[in-house]
Length: 289
Image 1: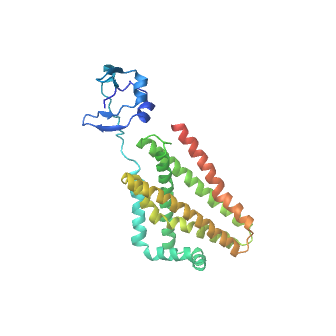
Image 2: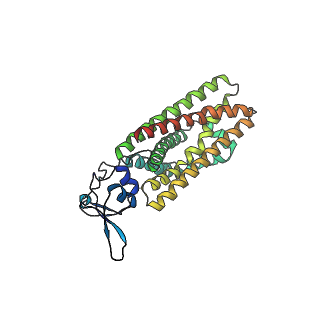
Image 3: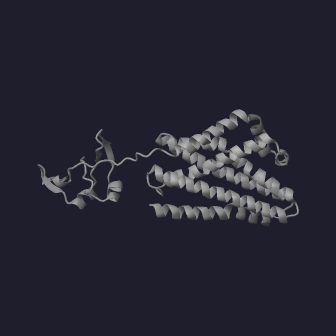
């Protein structure tokens, strides 16, 4: 074990070929020496008793290497807190209407009734859940990009990525609203589109009561707890999206809409925009790294 000079080895070699062991209060980091380190730096070789050869770092590489810590504040804490406050507000002040939305998600008749209702508490609850959903999507995507090395370990970069993703998602939701409005102008049964707009998003919005706290645990929890929470929220979110598509398909079939129209509707609203957004995120991540 030894300390390493800042310029003695390339950054990528330090990152992938050295295992940090400990650091002291002065910021020094101690790493174990891998064989590739010895081959690269040509350290001195000495003979022990019995003819065994061992490696010994040359004196030119015994200076200290200091850790560069990100001292910027954790900007993502604010949207997490805002989302958790909204979840708490929904549970404490809108419990009765939240129960009605849950029943509407399970029973089609009640869902149609809620879609035609202009109740102020239902509208407020929907707005709060929609804001929470927007925060969740941006936070989850930012965390995923950071977790899989698409973003550097920087709070500032994470904030910029979060803001960009939030704007992209808002544009996506505006696109959906305009597309649904345009379809509603040309179809014969406008009630189908109105019910699809409300009923289709109902499972996704209601899932935020559970998924946002899981996202918080995945980001700030202990390593083991973080991994469990992260993959759990990914799995649940995928199941919720699948349930959304099944509900829309059943809605179309109940109103006698051909299945081909459902496929086109789904591709226009979800699949094609998601593929475009994924492509943009991958290009964005490669540009940063």
